[in-house]
Image (cartoon, rainbow, N blue to C red; front, top):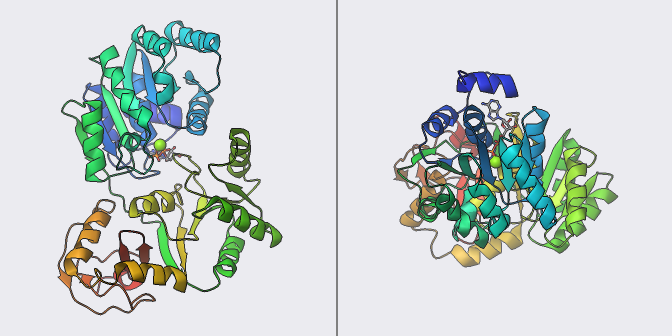
Length: 417
Ligand code: ADP
Ligand code: MG
């Protein structure tokens, strides 16, 4: 019990220093303070609760939205010799009962379960009987209708507070918008929480936008260059199947993933990809939440993403290992016309651009700057990037088109001018 957080980090993970706010969050948790941690994808949210849970007596209960995610985390802990258990779907009542018994008497340190499981009375009763060290709500944006993965069952997470009012709770997410944070705090009834937000700027991601009438060709070229894994995001199930076939036909190892395939096929495909047997995953946004594959080196958006939030979540899955990686958006005249039609009236308005910038700033904490009306030459300059933000000096080219916004930062911004 005399171990410091750093000792634990080194002993179980072999890392010698914390990142960003990890240490501050860990210390707050050790002191029984509630925490809301807003850390980018790949920012290291898991350690924020795993380290302090190992320093506390009792079991840490983690609510997590996906079976794949639960398995992934439980495996990771077990590999390090830590006693962890996940309640999977499809378990018989008696099995659940046994597993929960194990938690009470077996000296387990972590119990992972879905929010749906938590709704079962048996589960609540058993949790009540446990010596709980800490409650964790992972992917906490699922609580909010403003988040991109709203999950009604998440609304019942606050039950945990009734079961053990004194146990601290930590909520973690990579969705950093104000509305989502407010919803999380209210819904979980977090008490004077420490709210920590790390920079969402990922310096090892090169953002690019390719304007092309032949997206397939570009996709193929990019995919040929990779050594490790790639994800290609599309917006329809059919498109994911179509493109994965196209890549296969061109000698690239690809598979597809979307909400319409059954659970078994989903985990098979995920595993093929995780084990590098298939390099390229062509998927809808059903793929990826929380999956920790460190060596994804390319994310392609084959179609315009749903929203800025989704874009960052999805693009953020590259380069978790810190290696230089690419996030490429492919776009064509049809996309452009679509956007043009929707945005032509609002675009020339500075306040609109400013609004978008504020939205962006939720992800990249870069401070505010003055807008000057500079004609800026970009591939897309005909319909955006007429305003230059003076403090925007550190970014690679990035253009995001979605239903609500058109953002364009030029490559030139990456050098001090
Ligand atoms: P998140 O849940 O925020 O997306 P994870 O907790 O899955 O991120 O961590 C992402 C990766 O970063 C993991 O491979 C993890 O081992 C690694 N990581 C986290 N914290 C550190 C650290 N302090 N030093 C080195 N690697 C770390
Ligand atoms: Mg995570």
